[in-house]
Structures are given as C-alpha cells and as structure tokens.
Image (cartoon, rainbow, N blue to C red; front, top):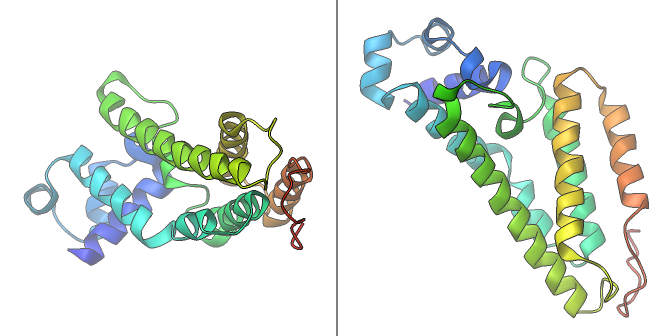
Amino acid sequence: MDTALDAAMRVFWRKGYEGASYADLTAATGVERPALYAAFGNKEALFRRALARYYERYLDYLPEALAQPTARRVAAHLLHGAVDLNTRYPDHTGCLGINGVLAGSDDAEPVRQALIDARAAGEALLRERFDRARAEGDLPETARSDVLAAFLTAVLHGMAVQAKAGFSRDMLMAVAEHALSTWPTGGSAPSDPAS
C-alpha cells in the first residue's frame, strides 16, 4: 500500500487532482480500479492520503524553518527549502499542495477547500512565529506579522507555480534572495549573522 500511495502521490503532484485520471492512477500504482477503491476509497480519499504523505515525506523543512533562531532565517529556510523541493524532481515540479487544485470544477470543491485550509494553517504558524520574533525584539515593533506571513506565503506559492511552469532552480533562488533582501530589520535583537 505504501508503494501504491507513493505512486499515486506522484501522479497527483504532476497532474493535479482533476488532471489525474483513474487510468493514470491505476497505471502508476499497478493496482486495478476496484482494488484501488477497496484500499483507499474514492479519488478524493486517495488524494487526501497522498497529500498527507506529501506533507510527511517532503515538507520536513517547514518545522525546521519555524525552529530557526531569527525571523529572517525562518524565511530563508522556507524559501530555500521550497526552491529545492519545487525543482528536485523534473517529472513532477512545483508543489502538490499548491498545484493540486489551482482551479477546479464544483466536484473538486472539497479538495480545493482542504488545500486552502492546509495553506491557511501554515500561514497561521508563520504569523505566530513572527509575533514571537517581534516580542523578542528580532523584528521591529512596527512589523506586521500577518503581512510578513502573507508576503512569504505569496512568494512561496508563486515559486511553486513558476517551477511548474518551467522556471529554473537558479531563477527561483534569485527570486528567493530578492524576497529576503526586503526582509525588515532594526529590531533590538543582535543582527543575524546569516543575513
């Protein structure tokens, strides 16, 4: 089941939720449709399991980023981790969570909403981390944690879309560095040596 789930995850990563047909899924997993249904439920249930697997296996850089000692290093770790993941696999570039259902039919609304909820949860974690950074003096008192989290999320999502569209690793790294060049400074904490 793990092998089949990994194969299905790669299909969804490459084609998105609606772009992945049952023929694609059965060919990739080597499991016929009735057995796929029996093992995982319907396509939506399989996608949700694949998404959970993706978060477990590929997004380990997210908690690592949140543990970084400064807000700027949080942002840098996230941006560099995203560039790496979005470009690591030439046959499935971008991010499963972003490209899963950028646009979809009414039938895909539950999947689209699940992805929106997952992205909102990630942004909330960033807001909390940046609130803490402001309280610790790492960010200026005028820094808005909600805006910083939204900005970083927008750049991360944009890079995922651009990776899917064929942008090179070098170009995405340049985008990440440009985003970091705008990071607020001037808190009362010592300056970040990684800046």
